[in-house]
Length: 157
Image (tube, rainbow, N blue to C red; front, side, top):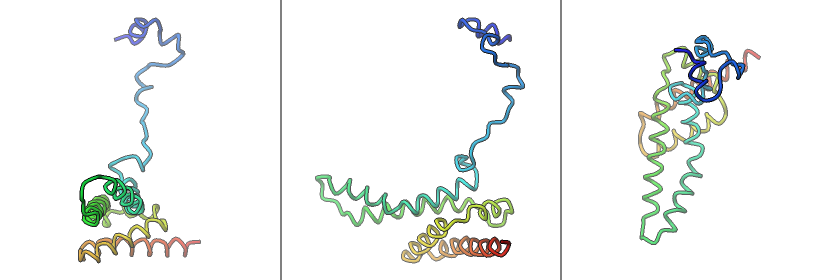
């Protein structure tokens, strides 16, 4: 197949455009920023952090929406259900991080921020209030790793 003939049908040719249409041009790898790759540990960490840290804003908007409805609704029940969905969703992202995998640990160490620590603490508090102690233990492992990682990074400086 001659690509020049195809573009010629549209009143243009590859030679007119000055672009190299050889197959090697199209074999160049396309890189997706890590935080946009839905199968990468950075994405999982950022989604967890974002969901937890924006939960208050999300709940305020949701309650405002339902408060304006004409029906009689139990706003506390709606808030509780939405909070549970949000924290469960955030938790599923963090569960995709393998604390036994060196690559995942490196990524987690690189992503250590005060915001992530705040998000982990909020998630632990939420799960303590709901007596989800296994989740608390799981989240505590992450928090311990972040604290240890921060300690090591500060010691290197």
